[in-house]
Image 1 (cartoon, rainbow, N blue to C red):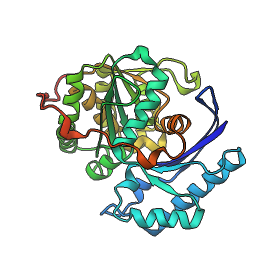
Image 2 (tube, helix red, strand yellow; image 1 turned 90 degrees about the horizontal axis):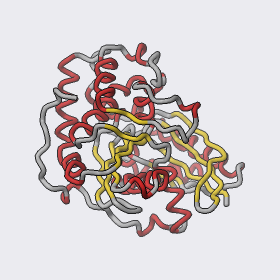
Image 3 (cartoon, rainbow, N blue to C red; image 1 turned 45 degrees about the horizontal axis):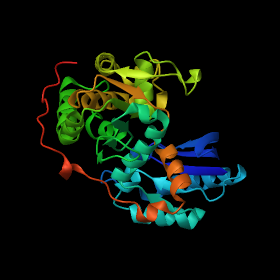
Image 4 (cartoon, one colour; image 1 turned 120 degrees about the horizontal axis):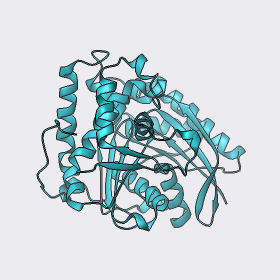
Length: 334
């Protein structure tokens, strides 16, 4: 069975075309269109006409590519930057009018749930009680569960691109004051979600997303050319040193570091601060970096529950269900 999914994120529109064998989506073709939508928004978060046109062109190209590879009418989903845009209704309508593709908004908690599903399938049941961290351009997803779907899922406004634009735009490299303010903001926003993860004491903690992949490579993990099945881990002590390393460099110099791509060099520092903070506040010393994430979760859900599953997808517990466990407020130790 040939299946595909289109994911419109804060930085890129991505297409994955797969062959589903025995319920496992095996990739046969991938493509991406780099739009950097998070950098094209107005100060109030609106995408506007120019960014919408680029988005529509990329979604249309992704749908046409999927059809050429034998997977017509792929489900298409949008994440944080479009979800949070005040003009999101106009954007979705324009995309459908120009391309015929219905771009659906994924609620943040559902995005975390689907990513958790992809991670659970990759890691297997031997991973036991599992926690998930996923840093995107516009949001951070956190989840915990013992089974196929999480018992707790939250989406927080701590995307690497968003924080860079909002809090690290004044200086290159950032000043000490900027960096301290960013850390305080991240710790405050993470307080409840990280308390829940600390309280649950997961057996395995998994990180997904290009941000975590690049940080792991910076800290010594094997490069992507070694393949999907090479184990990759990221240790908190190594990440703490990486934060200092990134903070001391201007954007252009960061792009020369192992694993840090030029398009993501600007937001790499904010991503590293979020990654280190969520690991520290959650009591996690090491994460396993997983190659499966949101797109694989969507494909698995389509294969297992049918292509209309999103119409009655259940809402997940949010921050109201988190116990008020004490969380460290200092960021001095690794």
